[in-house]
Length: 308
Image (tube, rainbow, N blue to C red):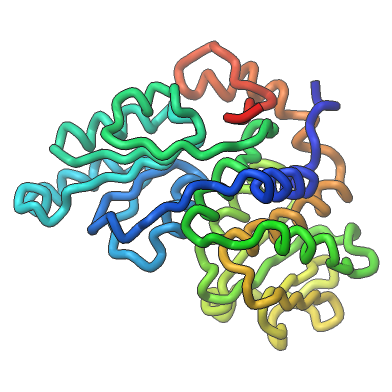
């Protein structure tokens, strides 16, 4: 089964091709006023990105049950009326999250790629985004489509740019890779942290910081075994001076472009290392992954897209 799994960089290019031919619907975030925005994993980070310029209350599967009662009076007063639940699958935690929001009298909106999912059946409003078939956990097109709906970037230009990248000599020799992003793209860092966990787990170090966070003693230790990849600004202080890569994307790139760029680079790292993900994901989706959710039903190794 593992032979059917493509690397992350290939998935990025396929997703960009797809959205060039199938632009996502536009998402008008101005229609939301101080909503709860709830998601798990990179759905949470997607919410942070989409609502980065809006007043919102962010929650995930670990704290939503405790957070929503704390705002009971604000809900009763009518200050908070909405909840936006983000879930690629429209399953797992998103179902009880919508049920809980509705219990508190909130109008619920679901952002998903599965219009027939259990969560879609109970949400008050549903935005369905098209996606492509992808290996389990990759979620490139699923969340990129939602981000593009808000940022309206040109996917053809994004693809041309990342395919033009010239990688450093000996790019694949490093034991550690760190990304330093402009402060505006802080929430991309969380997405990269999750990709590190999914693709490499304990086997390889990948770190990601905003410029502001990077200054806070994140690079006390300089090593020739770490490549520091700085995006959008010249790196003068972080990492070994001989082991840096400064990338200057064109101005039109926004969140979806930076997501595509960094995921593409991580895909190239994946190609250069032992295939940890491909060796372990089949066992995960058929055994201990679903069991953690209290079910023996296997997850899809290749998650079907919403459009064939």
